[in-house]
Image 1 (cartoon, rainbow, N blue to C red):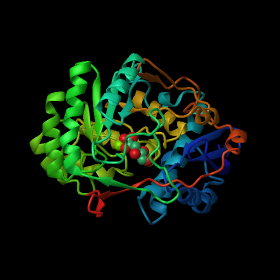
Image 2 (cartoon, rainbow, N blue to C red):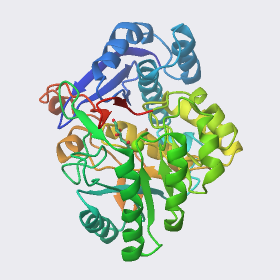
Image 3 (cartoon, rainbow, N blue to C red):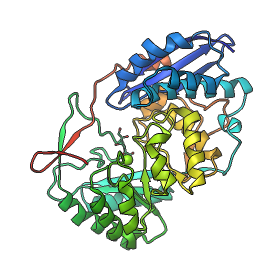
Length: 402
Ligand code: KDG
Ligand code: MG
């Protein structure tokens, strides 16, 4: 099966998405997500200028060789732009191989390891009461796991607390807006949120929290310790992870489970975190970590160290990434949980998909491939809109996070 053509499709049905479409001489097409929030056109150019010319004429079935060709062949290895571009190619090739076999992708990944994929939703509110009401709504809808974030008294805005409750979108301006942050106010307030959650809902729902890299290691250790009575499913990104050894300190002080990795793009970013069992969940996903091929490598390594997966699933990951991630989730032995933030109706119309969500669980569906397509005519109606993620400063004006 020869690759005859490949195209980058940029669309903005409410938010920007970059998609790679590969065409073959057998008439089959494959899709890969290449969306890098706030840096979309860098990946689009990388694909158009540097990847697509080398793809034409290649055998679409040679997935591993193609991955290595673009990873090693670039000379400049790793990095989010390169790895998103490689992920898009890899996802599209897995989609093609599964379509050629007339099988859903999970069958090529070893078949199902579980019946369905548990996902967590996002509850957030301006204050504790509003967040509790949101959690109640998720529980009523059947969710078994919910991430809880709330506004912090004294701070004008808090990253991760959506203005529109259901449609999370932190990228909100052409040039990055600036948020103010106070660790003292945050650390004082957050335990009150989880105390109220357990008082109202008990211990049955899994409750998660995202710290968005805002704390130093010792502050993160304190937060983890203070949240222990509320038995969180996980505490996410408690401190930035460029310094992987920093997690030793957190680990020494708390048994609150730790999830890290949505910004990682290769196995090397988590080699020490996983190798030393400094985390419990690895958050890498298909689009940002080199596609299905590399994500499986990370998951297999994590399995050796009793670390489970928890794929990133924010709205800036397109339904193409979500579809591929669900096939990975259902097949991989050490799956933990899948993040899920609902896409808008406009996004779902541009990306018709086979996956379904019901009662807290996903089913990837049985369509051949990863089961996600693109309506190109509809996509063409939505023009790209520059949108940047906000930057964070402390109250004295200095740049944060650590
Ligand atoms: O593009 C940034 C988002 O994907 C990120 O803010 C979402 O932290 C996030 C999460 O856990 O979903
Ligand atoms: Mg996060």
